[in-house]
Image (cartoon, rainbow, N blue to C red; front, side, top):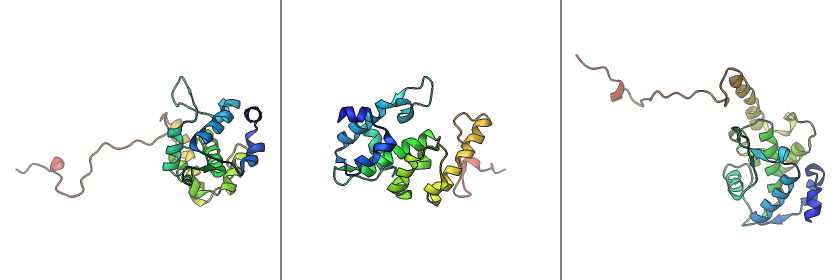
Length: 178
């Protein structure tokens, strides 16, 4: 099976795992072997230079589940949907979407739509694959690009550091009485 995975073309052989089930370690092992075939296109990288590869690990799987990017396992068993949502998330990250933008991916996109997303040879996001919420989220990528072009390297808007007062008696901003 390891030789078969070395020759694995993610898109063409994804359907052969439709009946796959396994533990978290089995899932990590499977994804790791696929990542090793083409690390540049299948692994995440650190944001800052020098860019280091970030191979799959148990913590990332848990984080993806906690943020709704992947569905919860059935007991301790993972299945085909976990593989598909993992690769869909990686594909979307490679398309410059942020993790907050792909949060709840497993709730907002069907397994078939996620599979189509992975299978699409066109690197542009196909809006027909996304349900309305994801369509709105992917449009905010242009905001990130605009902010980066204005000198905001990370593409995030500035956050205010001005304290807010929930009532009018905020002691810090009261004018002294004369």
